[in-house]
Amino acid sequence: MKKSLLVLSVIISSLAIGQKSIHDFSFETLDGQTMSFADFKGKKILIVNTASECGFTPQYEGLQKLHEEMGDKVAIIGFPANNFGKQEPGKNEEIATFCKVNYGVTFTMASKVSVKGDDINEIFAWLIKQKNPDHKGDIKWNFEKFLLNEEGELTNRFRSGAKPMSDKITSKI
Image (cartoon, rainbow, N blue to C red; front, side, top):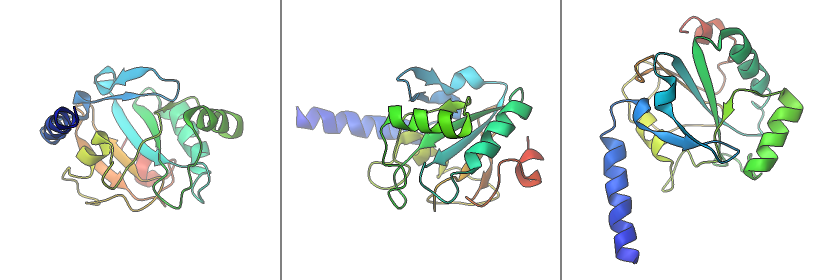
């Protein structure tokens, strides 16, 4: 049994490396629904690794505003992660409540994942390997942002300090 799980894991990892577009991936939402990135074809996608107890957590407000003002052009998807300073300790239900109550979040939120290390989620393993003009390699902290074009290709990557409503981001949408 363990050997077959290892083989399956290797196959899945191999498939993730061969993905050409974000549209080849699916993810689970905070409420347990499965969504495909293919549902967002023809729209830009902004992927953000989030955390509820971070100094950058107020960026949820800017992400929500961006969703309200530019949601027809860009899909925003938050991926809670507890990789940095243990700043996302909650379970999916707690994260959903926190986001709704404190920031009125209505944009898509994925279930909690790992964005670095041995247990990195396949989406983030793919994202950090993509060529882009901004930043390469591992995610450094919470609220890093990945902007993908309508074809599902990474076009820009922004570090944590880039505010969602800044011209640096909105000009690329």
